[in-house]
Image 1 (cartoon, rainbow, N blue to C red):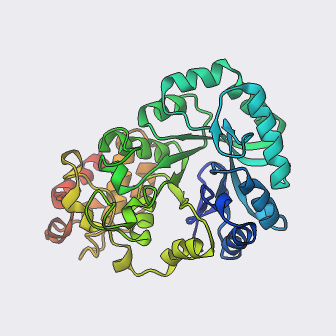
Image 2 (image 1 turned 90 degrees about the vertical axis):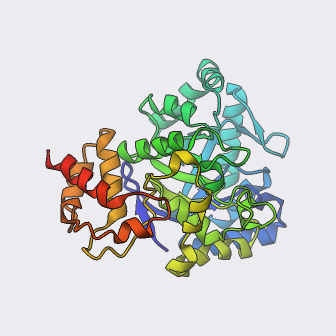
Length: 364
C-alpha cells in the first residue's frame, strides 16, 4: 500500500480507501470478509456515507481489533433510522444517529466528523440554523471528533463552507465524467472544479474522492459518456493526480471489488494511463495542464507535472509552493525547449512556452 500524509493532521492515509455505499446490501459474512480483506492489505481509510444501516455493524465487527489503525469518516446529517440512508438537518436526529453509529462501530471517537452532503447554500444555512454545525464543533472540542470534514458535489457551495476555515478534509466527487461535464453530479465547470482542488492543496485541506467510477458508468462501454470504458486503474490514477487528493474511495460490495481497487497498486504505467481522454476534453480544459505527466520523460530531467502544479498553486497564494518549486532538482529554468513535451501532451498544452513563463514568474 502507498500512503499520503495529511498536510494538517499528519495522518498517513492509504491512497486506496473504502466507500461503504453498497457493502451493507451484501450478506453479513461476505461484507465482513471484504472489510477485513481491505484492512489486511493496508487500507486504513473508510467512509460511512453508506446505503444502509447494516454497514455500521459489519464494520464494527470487521475492524474491532484494528480500530486504532483505521481512519473513519462519519457524517453528521446522514440518517439511518429507517434502515436505509436518509438526509437530515434536524439536530435531535443527528445526535441520536451519531450515538447509534458510535455504538455500532464499537468506537468512542470519530477521526473525521463531516458536515454532510451540502450541495446548496440553503442546505448550509439550514445546517447552521438548526444547530448541527455547532453540535459538530462541540463534539470536536470534547475530543470525540478529531477533525472536521465536508462532503459536497458543488464547487461553489464547497468554496463557501471552506471560507469558515474549520474544514480539514473535503469529500468530493472526482472523475473524468464529472470534470468533463458528463453525469448527474457534473456540477460546475471544469475550471471551477480544478480551482477547488487547487485551493485544497494550497490550504492543506485533504481530499477524499467519492464516486471515482461515476457509479460504475465509466467502467462500461455502453454506459460511459465517452463511448468507451476506462479501467478502475485509470479512474483511480485520474483522481490521484488531482491537487489535494489523498485517497480514492471506490464503493465495494465484496472481496472482489476490494481486490479490483487494490490492483491499481501493481498496475503498470501503461495500464494507469488515461491520456485517451484528451479527445473528449471540453474546450475550457484544452491547453490546461492536468499534471498527468504523460509528457515524461523530459530529456532535461524536468518533472513537468510538479513544476506546473507548484506554479498554479503559487499564483493562488500558496506560500509553500515557491519553496517546493525551488527545491526541485530541475526547475523550469533548465528547460532546453526541445519540444518533446509539446508533442506528447495529450491536452495540447504548449509546455515549452509555459516553462519560460514559469521560469520568469519564479525569477521575481
